Length: 355
Image (cartoon, rainbow, N blue to C red; front, side, top):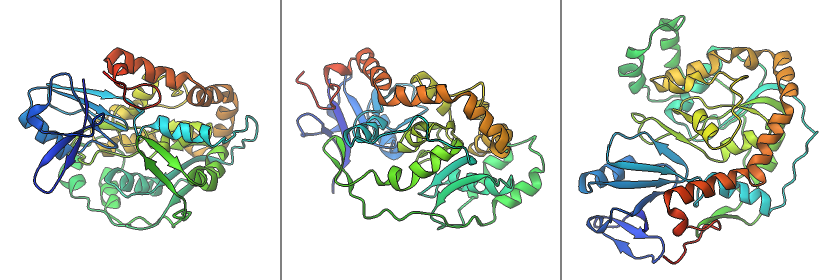
């Protein structure tokens, strides 16, 4: 069993053995090998593999895509390099502390948008469409226009039963008007070393921004990373989800497919008695964004309700954070490694064992 990472050089596409650091041709891949995609799955590389191999074991640390190749086994382990566990480890290693009492609900929800993508553009326009008021946010304010060809020529043709749909379709093509509100933390030195995320300063994103936003909001609407090809359904887990858990927020993931269900399988409380997560299995990206907001409109607009629900469920929110930080989530990862046989190759410190 080997873990092979896709790479491309000047001549062709190759794989790198994570243990020996030797290059491996695609034709040399064995039935027991895992192809490891760091961060999101590169769909072009994936298709190149499916054309040459009869069976593929996909290992990913951030994203799992529901791809169509029937001979592909996709295993999601949020552990290696970009996985959410590494961000958790950063908080622990840097002795970041969290209060159990210093939380006030001044806003119904909070969100953060960095890189502009199709689903995030839709989300920003829907924030304007629903005329939300009680929210905090981070957004750089760049790229107010977005190429909406896919929306016009594909998704919009398959959508029905949305109120004022003709007007909404036109509204989605307009530029985002939401004001810029961003913190420049470019001086921070978060970086990767080997298979770990390291930092030589502070955890700037949390300390400078999210630690001031999430604890003061009831809900975190998480604009998680999405697939590099919007034709594929997927879910991803990054530090964006972690911020919501650490901030003791109810979580909503617009856009990505099946994300709340996967979080539940990973052992997290998704508060499906408070949040309506039925949006996650809608057919289109637009519908998953729209219904994530529309079906949770009360907690996103009524601050009195948001405060009450957060107070009533505070112990559960705190339990979610403790599960994340103090062993429960790591135990789930270990079980996934054991059941897949990968514990023979990867130990809990993220290094390769001798096989």
